[in-house]
Amino acid sequence: QVQLVESGGGLVQGGGSLTLSCTDSGSIFYITDMDWYRQAPGKQREFVARITGGGSRNYADSVKGRFTISRDNTKNTAYLQMNSLKVEDTATYYCRLDSIYWGQGTQVTVSS
Image (cartoon, rainbow, N blue to C red; front, side):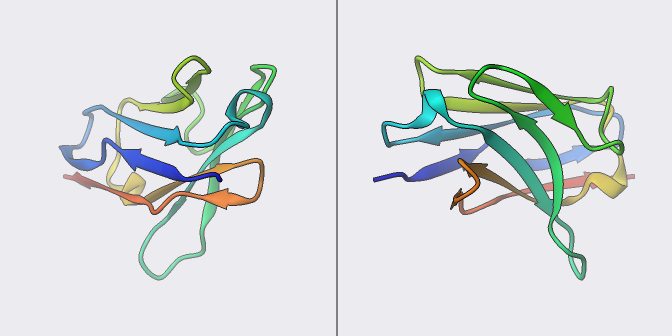
């Protein structure tokens, strides 16, 4: 059974950095794609980044060059390193495994 647990959110000043983690308690992590999405208040959930089971990465244009997605298959964990954070990055961040399973979300708030 897949269960995703996210952590690492918080309050940070603009220009700062945070690293989010998403850990899968199941057994399919290493072969599947992992995505990060985010949802700001009053807005639709939007794609942020993806890392495939093979390690290929792609990013939304809004975060390209600032965010880095990675994974550690030995720990069943994916990461989202977020640098040069902007106020508009404020949102609840969700991880998604295999295009099916969602985490509970972790709040990221960037102050000006």
